Amino acid sequence: MDNWLFLPPIAFGLLWLIVAILEVASRRLAPHGTSSLGKTKAYACGEDPATNRLQPNYGEFFPVAFFFTIMHVVALILATVPQGGLKDFMGIAALYLLAALSGLFILFGDKIERDLEDLLR
Image (cartoon, rainbow, N blue to C red; front, side, top):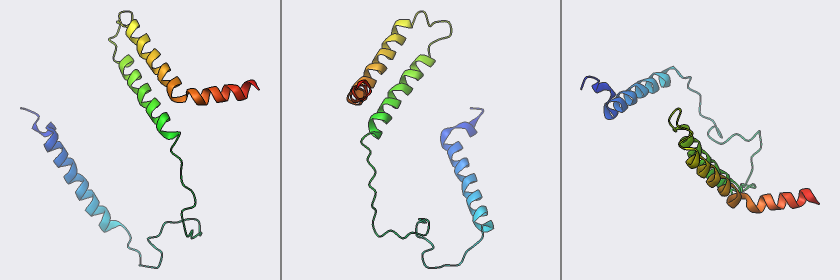
């Protein structure tokens, strides 16, 4: 094999070595501060909150993330259609787009329905 440097374990090891050398060099160049009370605490604009008052709600995040995953797969499938072969794969492309649209309505059907009701009132 002519390009043995491109073997994944060897390339990973070489990149890891380069990153380790850069990390040691940058640690020596970085300014060293003095220790003080609160230095390692999170900065909150001068505020020192006693508790975490805001709990994020991921209820809408996961459907959106799942939908973007579906759309990326559809885009990948459609992008890998051979050049000039779209006529032959038009049925499959339409099937993938239909599946993506049905996934959209499954994930967001209730929200779309509520929004349409509010819009029509």
